[in-house]
Length: 437
Image (cartoon, rainbow, N blue to C red):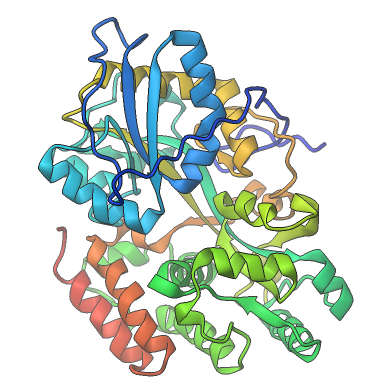
């Protein structure tokens, strides 16, 4: 088992998840979590009820830790979950109506209407700056968790965008793992000739489309010009005028035009797309590393049926960068049990629990702690983390969430040929120009 030295962008492996699995995802009234009250945490957060509204990935990783926290403290953590897009839609309404949970999943930076930066500026998140775990935030994570000098979000993990592939399908087609763009095209051609859909693209709703944009931009945009966000904010360049951004979308269009994406991709939901890779109907899928356990669950061979690689974007394998993201929890400023919520975050911040969550989910530790994880799921891309070849998701420092939403929504029109690339990028520029929401 390899051991990587402590680094904000690195993780290594050995299991700590000794607690039994607990199913916590609860569907409530078809519209997400509604906070109906609970314990007030007046005893310092060691009893009472803490309510939480998280996405489905977080729910899976938190389950054994919730059970351990409840056993240790005698309190209850009442968790409800939804897919990320459903959660983002519902959370804004819940915060406005005063029905949001004590703990909520928020996006990094200003990447959506329910991102840490947006909600923090609106005073809808509690200040967590005095928590002991703040000292363990890596610099890049803190920049996305902080608003006007206050830390308002806790990173449960950090995710990487990776290409997961079916080992058996690759072997049958005689395909080698690609390390350059031309090698990826060759692999897709071989897979197509073998009667397999080369790349599963569950683009219903646009969520999985964004992974392609961020993964390619990590190499084509941010590795080439780390100052791009500052330049765009200053009006010195834009999506439509920047050659690097145009090339990012051109790469996606090239694969689409070659027929390497799923038939009917705009109507394929994520679970169906993952299942097609698990069954061998498709060979690979680009996804966030937190989604790997879901993929494993669809295959009889589990984790052993798959491996991952970083999506190449050019002809220089040594320049490939990986897109990474912190996954945040925050305390609702109007929480019914704020002390209980903070106590649960403190529990999650213990090094052994940081490690346990990362090991359970096959992701990187959220805090900059030394960790060993038993899963080798991300081993193929660890050299890139070790050498600092990473970049945050492109949308984190866009001034508002509408830029991303336009990309997701108009991106579907772009994929089906209704609009061309300049039209899509001009729409994104128009939303960018509106500034901070």
